[in-house]
Image (cartoon, rainbow, N blue to C red):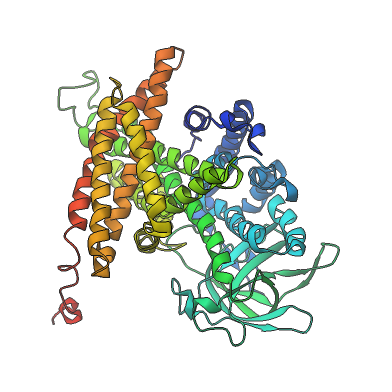
Length: 601
């Protein structure tokens, strides 16, 4: 049976030492996020995740959700009780606006807790996680009446929320949706259609589910310009805020999935269901992107979370399992064999995982800080810069973070050898659960094209130029330091490779857009590595300063420096290879005709 311990020490290092949340105490919400408060949230939240949620992870995987004849759904044993504890403790309110019952603290603190929840039980974490995306859209686009009606109970956790985008005939190409919204005399709309892959679409953990649904009104353009967004509650809400009669939206089936069995992924049928327009008619795409961007950052955290959980168990196994002898001679001569931890290839996989998870944690929490600063920074210039940076990095956090998260999960399974393939050890569940993160909320191919096709050129390239300047300045500042200089030099070289690849796109993609498409995946990974290198340089800088001060935790900071050097040695060289792949263009990739892919009899 796998185990999980929340990495609270590392999260405290990032929040309190690297990000220095206390240094933003002059901004709204940050004044509450003192080191003592952050430590208490991380400590108690981590304990809840390890003791309550983690033991249910396997239960959810094996039992799954059950759909009944009336379309209702029962979640796995223990989930409803755990959710009640989650709500009573207020874990879902940490970063939500105070105006609607939240605690109003920084998203960085909320993201740290979100990682713990997802590592302990990803399927469980999706129930409140999807609600967050719906809340974000209502805050941005909902009317005051809609906000007052839905947000307090969604934020408290009494009600949950969903995002209804995908249909059987369309996923990415939302212009093809067929769900119709007919205007009614009372100002509402009657929605009819079918939505698929709706996470947490029906369940028994909350008294109401608030669906946010994309649909088209009569006469709307047959494209993305004709999409509107509607709020459609499972139960209609009375004027006093109480739950009223059942709406005509029903779960037709639960998808049989590879993983995340504890989450009810539903096909939902809308039969003239009563809904209300959110924002302007035919302007639903903008609202949808608010939901999607919030969800994509959360999915990036899921990539980290499964890697972290798998890594913890692989380390424990590698220290315990004995096979063979160390190449340099027996590490423990008195024993029949050495722990597999001594073998360089096992160490390679573990060090790759450690360097990724700690770097990715820093990126996710730093990214969450940019979300806060984009709304709360003192000057318009600071807010705009933060918005540019997090917009640029959202597809990287989602795409690169989940690609590498899945890779780490499979490598940690590999550490177990044959036992990793056997169900009782639990490693194969981490692999199966991690796989979906590369697919939903926009496949990683879509993330790569969003990065290269939209974000690089957005606002005249202001985002990528701000990124290059930020990383370049950090490199220059560290070059003269004896300990940090080699790390900075390596990152500087990788940054130059990314800049060259960016220029190649600018020179070649306009003439042949396939060149952009052929290199987008490699560019996303290139930028992911450079960004994590940037995080590692910052962490190394803090660790070096702490060691110079002296103290009781020297081993922690020495480990940070050693891991930073490993990242620079073993990850950054891949950036040059990605550049060379990008610069080969698309000719050989697109050369064959369709018939060449058919298997000859």
